[in-house]
Image (cartoon, rainbow, N blue to C red):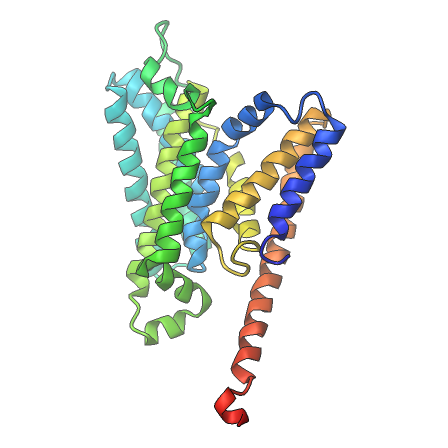
Length: 327
């Protein structure tokens, strides 16, 4: 249950809402809507997961998302850039912003909460500078069809954003579970001093973690612009809380006690099913932040419990006598 309990809970919640709302909830249209609407929160949660593996937190995610989606709209609508060039520049900009976050945290020795809150505020200021506090609205011809298809297109009968999320999950799983960088980040997150003594390049690894987070934020920003089709300077912050809920709650499943890509995906699925269900039941507007807030508290509590349980299990294994000692 510690490994797959959250997945079982997700299935149970889906079945409950399917019984309560049999005509609307267990339908392909509803599933497609959930996959489409939750693709951006899922990407941000995956982006938040990478620094969390090293014990760091990136609070600039929401600000970066807002800046990325406004920038790509500004380049396409105001500057007249081709949308592929604008999208690539914004994604590269997200990568650079992530590197800056990592450098500030690791080499300026500023706590990740404070550092990323500061850089996030700077991003918000740049967003206001680009938009002058107003929305960026396309002309009568609208946005290029190829750009809006990034969000509206379908593949195998499902929204294409769901496949973006799946691709990022696979990439993160490979990096965190199969490559030395992922192992380094896990060691840094569990014991930074031991990581240094083992010769792990802690500063460089953490910069890579923030760079990966910024890269995913840039991708999410492009996708958000294709979804909303306007540049709204106030968008972004509302995505921050769900992102950390998904990352922290995901650390309690699949690999309990460790932030992991598959666990984050399961956590996001649970949140998406829950929000879709209460929305179809006619919940008031305040139900969503209430749900996210309660989920965050539960996520932090469960993540701490899973980490303590893993440490107790490891300590018990260390104290257990070996077969040779028993003989």
